[in-house]
Image 1 (cartoon, protein in one colour):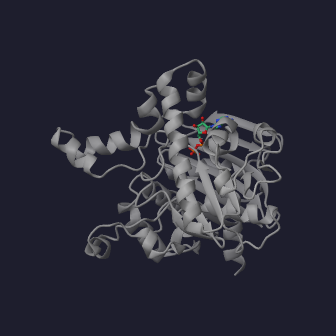
Image 2 (cartoon, rainbow, N blue to C red):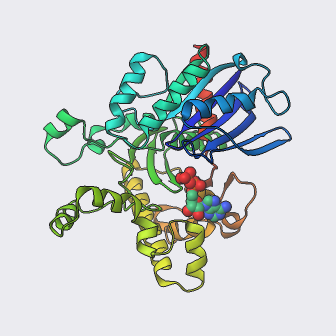
Amino acid sequence: MKILVINAGSSSIKFQLFEMPAGTIAAKGMVERIGQADAQLHYSANTHQICRSVQAADHQQAMKAILAILTDAQAGAVKDAAEIQAVGHRVVHGGEEFTGSVKINDAVLKSIERFADLAPLHNPPNLTGIQAARQALPNAVQVACFDTAFHATIPQTAYLYGLPYEIYEKYRVRRYGFHGTSHRYVARRAAELMGRDKYALNAITCHLGNGCSITAVKNGRSVDTSMGLTPLEGVIMGTRCGDLDPAIVFYLADKGYTVAQLNEMFNKKSGLLGISGVSNDMRNLTEQAAKGHPRAQLAIDIFCYRIKKYIGAYTAVLGTLDAVIFTGGIGENNAAIRRQILSDLPQLGIEVDAARNEAREPKERLISTDRSRVKVYVIPTNEEAAIAADTYRLVQS
Ligand code: ADP
């Protein structure tokens, strides 16, 4: 069965075509700069590598371009679009309603629209992607996989903020958490690597990409996570500030900053970029720090320090810790950051093996020493494969 996985952003649609249940990738690519005159299609399948400009004034047109290339006589991966029996969509916010992936119907669409209030940058383009796919493939089963769903098991003690209870009742202001598909995927994978049942693992999963979040996984289920009502909370990220004293908002408002300016500052100008004044990209920061740039080094130090603090806190939350898992662009590729985060933690039973940490292959590997009580893994995330697997399971059911 061919399953198409779609990740629709405000100006791009990423896609992967899976052959299920094998899970092999038949084709993948993206359309970027949707809405602009210079929209681009990137595509690869078998021996074909294509990069060309396409007509994509909106998501509908981008979707058409994707189906055109997928069914192309030379480069295509299917003869007929009807071979694509299902489409799995990444949806960022599922509110309190969605605790797992679901088949999409009109009621589901309405809910995703309602939660746009909580994820104004993400849910609207996700919805547009679903509508475009429904139009282009009217006979395919459409499935939504939510970034928040894995965190539905977080207990109230961990998800409620210290605000008046009515604020939760009235507006559903609470911790939701994000990157759930990634945290779930790497936690399940670690259980497999350790030869354990997926519900018999206590782990701390560190998704460190442009956005970063840390999750405490107890008996295979998320029990706490660093991101909150929105992806702004938690550790510092490429351009996001992470945890703050909320009074900073009032203080800066008194200094004349508007809500819109603070929103922009906290989301786009803070974190690694804001502290270093150099870049939001860890590769650049590592390079600059090595050349002696003090604020690049400071940004790296704060990044690692905050993550270490979460690992300590979540170790206490879990009681016993079996594994720490690194994933995402930084987590998978930056050995120095992993080393710094996990330095001097013998009291937690965590000991990183220098050679295993520095080795680049295999990508998925154990990096702790043989005597380390807690296993440490690097596991490349694969949200698309997880979405394809969920979609396949729902189509079969
Ligand atoms: P996103 O969260 O947007 O999916 P990524 O997971 O690719 O982004 O993470 C981006 C971060 O990962 C950047 O800070 C980048 O420097 C870092 N990164 C990505 N690839 C590498 C690599 N090969 N080596 C070192 N750092 C990398």
